[in-house]
Length: 131
Image (cartoon, rainbow, N blue to C red; front, side, top):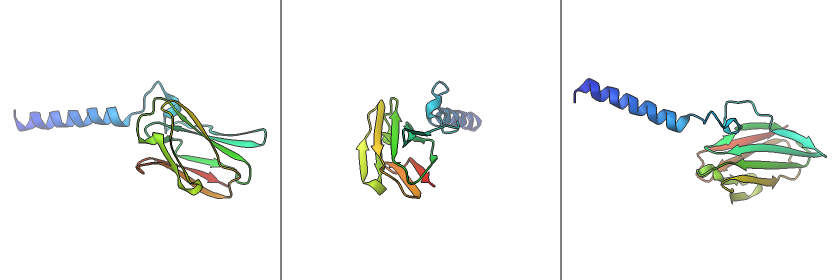
């Protein structure tokens, strides 16, 4: 095989790997980091912040109100990667999430500041900025 053919094959393999590992599925917009997501709502005096876990966390940044009772809802859908091992150090939370389902985490009444969640390996993270 000549040098040009080797280079072309190598580039094709790299492009293929990039498509497989870095593209979000088109049929699953709820796990896409580039789509605007309305993920904070207040119902009956309780604030709910929803984050999706699969190949990372989406959205990566949420903005919520400080000083009101808050619950974090983490949703999974066939999540088999390390984002299913959630750690929130500031509240002492560490748990394996269900592969498909949701976990509701009581954040009590958060003060102004930033709360960070991350996977157990530290590869993926998200923040909730309480203002």
